[in-house]
Length: 147
Length: 96
Image (cartoon, rainbow over all chains, first blue to last red; front, side, top):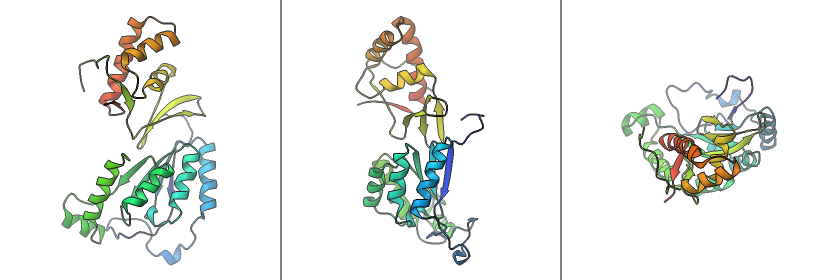
């Protein structure tokens, strides 16, 4: 956006937990070796510090951020700081009701991973059956205008 | 890209994916959308603040002519060009 030396975007890797096992993934899967996750309070403090450094965009990523039960609270905290918040997700596990809650909490947009345009290769790359759920999530994202 | 200028009856509004906010570091408005942002100058921000889906382009031009104490014929060309650019990029939409 500019060559100016400042922060524009914070990418928050909220957890390493993930329901997928994508063949290309570079995140750790040996979770026992990475036991420490930041608490809700810690993340909210990090968001505030990032905003003070100039960050305007917040990418909520992982792992799978939906596996954090406090995601709604984190989104609401980001919204209170006027962030443009983007959920980077596999779409699993997600219900339409939870996506509505996230939008109500102030989520700006959703970036949904799809491993292939065909179900077979997509599920194979993701390491589990997931393609149909992703299509369903994509429909909710469009319907709720989160893209 | 559309070569045609938008109709003066068109009522532009921000696309749902867009968020207009003040950037405290620069004291300028910025239009945020997925993975990108458009830093606006004062006139760009003034135009977008009127793009709420209720005001037609002719009404917006008239309001800006008052705000900037400027000739609306000159403003019309600039506003239509700016709005068309953002319509083409999907950052503005025509309100139904």
